[in-house]
Structure formats: structure tokens, C-alpha cells
Image (cartoon, rainbow, N blue to C red; front, top):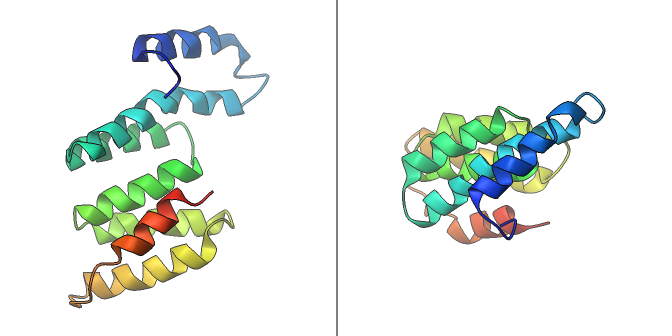
Length: 130
């Protein structure tokens, strides 16, 4: 994603260590390698690995795309409570509110055992909106 290797990403992030106090947003950059690895694992259908990586990324902050990814990865694993929690965090930031509300409603029904069709098309739109 950064046009290089994970080693280069780690080296760059390490070079910023003394700047975190000056700009707290730089702290979140430490989660980028894990966030990138999460998406790569998910594309290879390694859902558990994807969740582990995205959880690691989220230890560095609530980045919107990480929250969306975490919600989707957990949804795919049938972990509706975890997915709903991430969607509520998204909603709390005021982004993607309509999509998050729709998906929360859907997952609450799925968690209750409803046999509604999956909303993969909606998920795709929600995940990749800007």
C-alpha cells in the first residue's frame, strides 16, 4: 500500500517516535501495517487472521476504515455483537451514520436468528464509500 515493504513501513514509523508528543495523529500511523495486513488476510479468506490484525490496528486509534473493516470481518465470522459495537463507534463519530444504522438493524435481526438475505452489496458500498 505504501509502495514498499512492511519493513520499510516499520522503519518509517519508528523514525517518527520522537514526534508523537508534537502530533498525536502520528501515533495512529503505527496501526497502518496491521490494518494493511488485515485487508490482505481477508482477501485470502483468512478471517480470523484479519480480525487479529485489525484489532491490533485499532489499539492505535479509531480510524474510520479500520472500524468498518472490523465490523465487516466480524460480520463475516458471525460475530454480530462485535460488528455492532464497531458500527456504533462509527456512528458516534458522525460518519456513515445511515449505513451504520441500517447495518446495526440488520445485524440485530441476524443475531436474533432472522433468515434475511445477506446484504453483501450494501456492505460493499458501505465499506468503500469515501
